[in-house]
Image 1: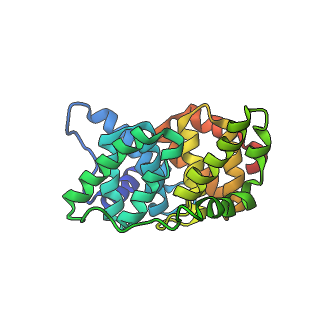
Image 2: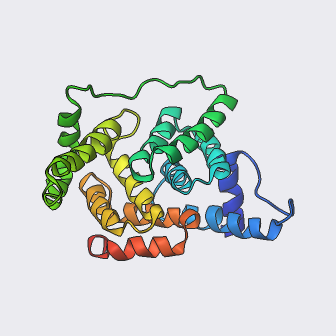
Image 3: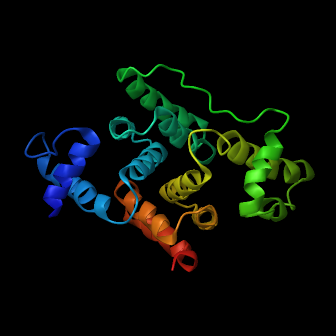
Length: 250
């Protein structure tokens, strides 16, 4: 099977339609894009279409490429990914890209949900209370990452030396990673991809590659996730991520 046939089959599976032939003002560019992404990259490595689409949604959220995000939210629904899982992939980005950009992505996602007759708001994904928020976050964080952040920032002024690591535990690990809809393995793998897509976060990429391996991803799956993200985030960010995690992935 050649990449043109691959592209046709993958495009039909994801979007229920046909790839570009000669339509639009830039059909040559679209042919290059579609044949590369859907005819080559999508067939490289072990990850299935559902994981690949969650990766794509994550990178598009980071990049704030909202028209393409809408298209891939639609693809997620088309291949049977639950609205809750899609929502969680978008929500997961918030501690890393900030709340305003995540709100932009949520608005685009919800527009697709509404167009598909999905009632909003979706069912709650919360699993923590104000009373157990820190403890549940720490229960996820410490087995994978230990006390690294707490130990690294003891030099901060006293209030911040306590607050900064606590914010990380409570926001990243409790408010988001304890939520229903995605398991910890999937969340860690998506975190690797979103950090790679950010650029300039290689220290965190390496840490979360290690976290992804500890929570059940194989080296091949991590590499596959990064390679799948490459057409959406660019080749330099793929190489940066691979280079900073080479010792863990080789």
